[in-house]
Length: 200
Image 1 (cartoon, rainbow, N blue to C red):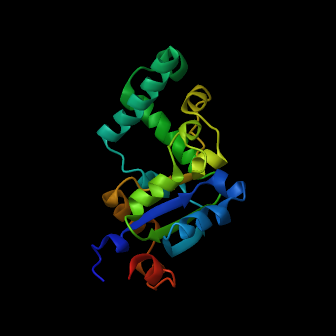
Image 2: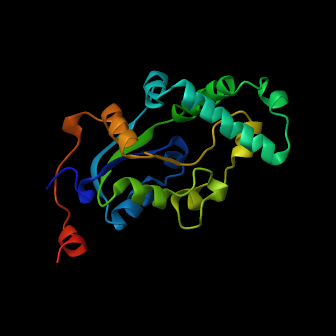
Image 3: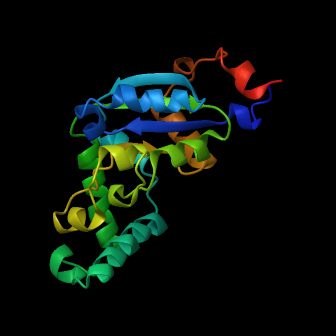
């Protein structure tokens, strides 16, 4: 089958330290398989700060975007961003948030996986729910396993604990798969359900 076929699309999913420590790994993976996605790579990893530093494709725009999100949270609640963060520079705030993300990701092992299936990126994003757990719908992974909020995280100067990471688009997925897995760790096989789900 052509690698560009929607059924062959791949995405990278990382069950974060809180998801692992909650003992939710098995149920989370089961939800993906139940939705028709195929696990083609899977491993437990203790990430290093260096590895996570490369995972986040840092650019001035990306850092400023993190700062923008923090600003939006503070504006929503009428808080003074300078008082809490010690600066009003969006790029500097972005650097702080990135530091929190790296600390969060390296506090315990994570479970990394590559999922393959029909429009895998979109399907996974739908299953995991909103990045901010309190905004995630019940029935989604984040909605069921976390109640954290960006406002609490910003006030406590830490990352939002949202159980799972999922690639945001195909380009990001391709980068993350290559970053987390070697080619020999990714496997090819046919799920028994594929003929029932996708063929007449």
